[in-house]
Image 1 (tube, rainbow, N blue to C red):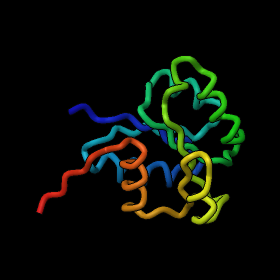
Image 2 (image 1 turned 180 degrees about the vertical axis):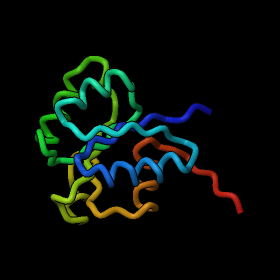
Image 3 (image 1 turned 90 degrees about the vertical axis):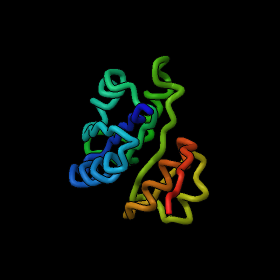
Image 4 (image 1 turned 60 degrees about the vertical axis):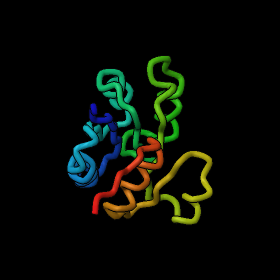
Length: 126
């Protein structure tokens, strides 16, 4: 099975590194980090992700505008986008029209969220 590719766009480098460790640690994902909203589109075109995790508030741009750029791009418009943000409560995230995960995030929350987005069937051993 090929690993699924996830692009994580967030200006908190410690968080993108942590997400990469958690997700790649499963052996099911390859994660590319991008800290710049203005570079995210170019990075996505080159990396060709299966999922994009995007912060709503980036140092150099608005995450909603970046998401719009992904959705307008013919090569990327079918790639699922989810927001990971500290701008909403957990209750607001659950009600959002775009899949949204509220920071801070535990490793189990992150993995469950990504699995749900990708409809990944997890086989539990034990």
